[in-house]
Length: 242
Image (tube, rainbow, N blue to C red; front, side):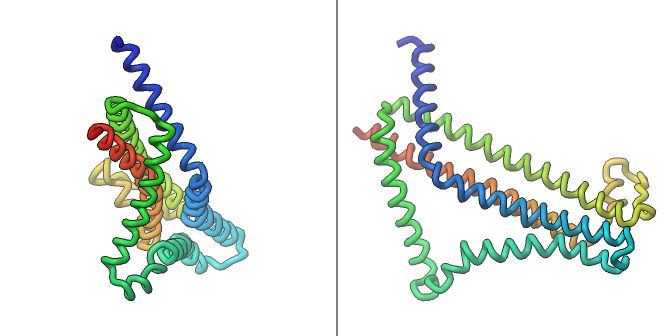
């Protein structure tokens, strides 16, 4: 078999593997989408909407200017409420069983569940994907490269989200107090915007929570996809032994 035919065969195997992963996580996609929508809703859309509504009502004279401080706290409250809810549903619910059985026993119980999941997925992979050992090696290497690319993309989107959220905060402040938003480029042309920016502590906390939730959501997706990489590696080990 020539090199071109071998590469085409390996590429076909990788496409078949990706299709298997896509079909297997089809049911989980709805849960991931709801989680991403919830992060966007609670950490971006709702704080922005209520802050803009309050600032517009202040500019129109419906609300007194003293209410402006509430807008800053709204940006902070919504991410905190969502974080507490998510932490309660994912972590705090296991605390009673951890006290009864111990933290180590609880962690081992989760490992057994993961083992059962890997066993089921490996059986389905071996049934649907009849690859040779070199083809599994090619597939594993290609999939690992794509996961690294997704992780780098997650970091890039987190940095981009931070820049956008910062500009939105500055825009809201300029709407509320246009006479106070005079940027003075002094001392350092690179860091002058930091010195001229609003140093409201609640805004920086909200920005940090938003970036943390955005990064963790993307990392959770990559972590879930890595589980299939582990299954492929287990099958590859079995192929090499046989």
